[in-house]
Structure formats: C-alpha cells, structure tokens
Image (tube, rainbow, N blue to C red; front, top):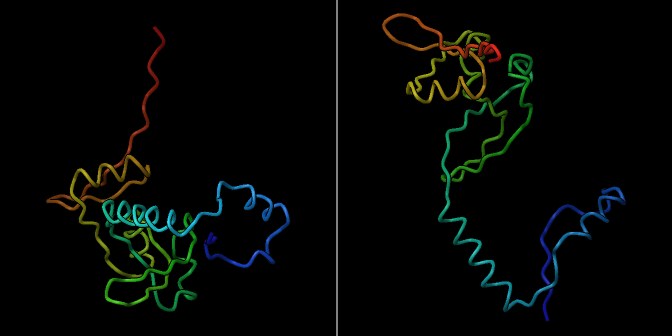
Amino acid sequence: MSCHRTAGPPLAGFAPHAIRAIADTNWAPVSLDRFEPAWAAEVEDASATLRRETVHLATGLLLPVWDKLPDDHVQVVRIAADDGRSLLGREVATVHLPDLGAKLGLDISLDLAPDALAETVLRTGKPLPFRGMEPLTVKRSPRQQQPAA
C-alpha cells in the first residue's frame, strides 16, 4: 500500500494547536490505484469549470506609491501567465481604478457596460463615473424606510 501526502509548508513553524487541527482533517491514506483515478476526475472537473477574469495589478516599484493604493485589500499576489511570465504586484479592484489614476496623475476611465457598471455600484456602494454625452455619476441611493402599515 502506498501513502500519498499533499506537499505543504513544514509543520515545524506551526503552533501545536494548528498541527492537531491538520491531523484532525478527513485526509486518509489511500492506495495509488484509488488515488490516480480520483485525482484525474478532480483535474477533469477543474478543467471543465475554467474561469477567466480580468485582474488589475499594480506592479513594479510600489513602495513610493503604496500609500496611494486602496487599503481595503492589501495583498501582494503572484500570477503565472499563460506565456510563462510571472507577475507580482498588488491587486486593485476595478472600482478603485479612477481614484488611483487621479492620485497618480493618470486618466483611467472605466469603460464598463451599463449593466456591469450598475452591478459594480450596487455590489460595492461606491459611486462611479459614467462616460457619455454628459458627465454622470452612478450612485447607490439609500432606501427610504417605508412607514409601518
């Protein structure tokens, strides 16, 4: 019988309660004959549910502009691109692009479709500019409380 284990960080740096929590998971030793088809099924399922999304990444020398970046999602990420490049930087949500551009002296416009713009405003509550014949700002208005009947 073969036993397989997921590769991860060494447990020496973890607190004892964290090591016990890892040991209390549902992982169990399995034979290679059981593992390979189960793994192939997981890979096939993941391939069928491939998701693509646009990610805005602030890269390069970030320290001088760190205070200008939005502070609601402070996380450095590494993205492996299909062409072999590795991109390292801070992810910037679409809703923050106009403000970030203004802070950096850039004109970053959001050319979102009207339905995507409305969905973003409703989800985040943040007003966003709408580019059209006249300058407009799409805002979420607070609901007025209905009088009790």
